[in-house]
Length: 246
Image 1 (tube, rainbow, N blue to C red):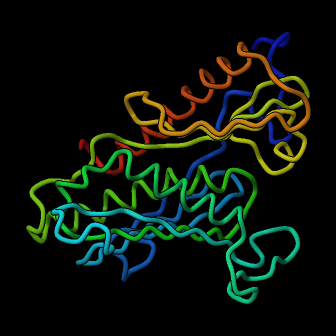
Image 2 (cartoon, rainbow, N blue to C red; image 1 turned 30 degrees about the vertical axis):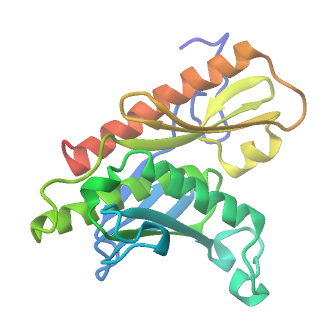
C-alpha cells in the first residue's frame, strides 16, 4: 500500500475505489425494465416503461424516443424535503438531472431501430448519499436494456437498439485529493465537483465539472477524467455481466 499517496476515506475506501454496487433487477413487476441500484448509501429505483407512440415532434418520422423523469422521496435526505408535487412545480436541479439522464441514454440508443415508440425512464431516489444522478444513469441503462429485451422477445424489434454501454460516476477533489464516487459528506467538502458520463468504449457523453471553492488546472481535469474512466470501466463490466453483449 502506498502510504505517501493514498489517504483512506471515512468509509475506508481508497481514492479511486467506488462504493459497493448492488443491482436488483425486475424490482417492479409491472415495468418492462426495472432495477434498484445501490451505490453505498445511495439507492435509486430506475424503471423503463414502453409506450407505443412518440411525441408530436417525431410523428411519422419512423423514429423512437427515450425520455426521463427524476424524483426524490421526502425522506431520501437527512431532513425531510417537500414533495415537488405539493409545491406544484419541479425545481431547477430536478429538471437538470432528468434532462441529463434522457440525453445520456439517447446517446447510446439507435432511435431509428426503436420504431415509433417511447421509452419512459423514471429514476426515483429512495435514499440519497451522494451521486444520485450518476447512479440513476448507470441503473437506467440496465432498465432500458431490459425493456428492449422485452420488446425483442415480443418480436416488436429485431435486436436491442443500443450502440454501447453507458455508465456515470462522480469525481471530486476533497482536501487536495482526487477521489471517485463521493458520498454526501465528501461531496459537501469538495473543492471541485465533477460528474462524468461515458460509454463502454470510452467516449464522452457528458462532463459536468464545477470549481466549488477554487478554480482548477487542466492537469487536474485530465486526472479527474482518467480516474473517472477507470471507475466507469468497473461499472460497465458489471453491466456487461447483467445485460450481456449488445
